[in-house]
Length: 177
Image 1 (cartoon, rainbow, N blue to C red):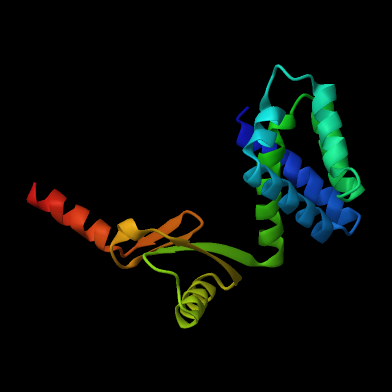
Image 2 (spheres, rainbow, N blue to C red):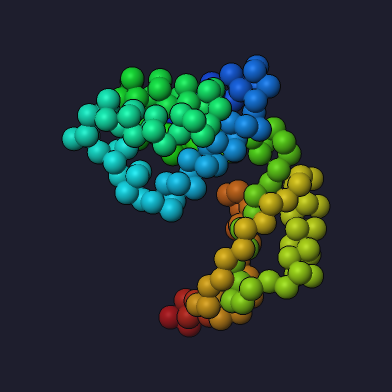
């Protein structure tokens, strides 16, 4: 079974448990903390996925790092996953949990990539456009990529709107070829 399907199932189970115990917000914050630690320290994620390191050692690392810093419901999934030799899925589970949380709270993540940082008015305009299109509260992630030359790339879920000069130049090059 694909890891993403397994991760979704664990995330859904964790989400249901957290909802039952009315701690969804706390567990979401914990999952965000886990992802943040992994993003800042890729070695941590490599250790969890390393088959040479014994599962008891991985659980010890998770216990020292998270047991006192996360809700017991969150820590329970870490315990279950290490017992089932699935530590490498925790990051994917955290991502899937975040998606479920956003879906339940009516939050839409959007990523806008521009040549220069957005001004406040541009940021507000992007949020307004996405909110009108989706009917959800928008969380906007901003990225800067000077290779775009001009314009922007807006990604909302699986949809991408690319108005960059780079894309237009590439299209023109294909037409002339």
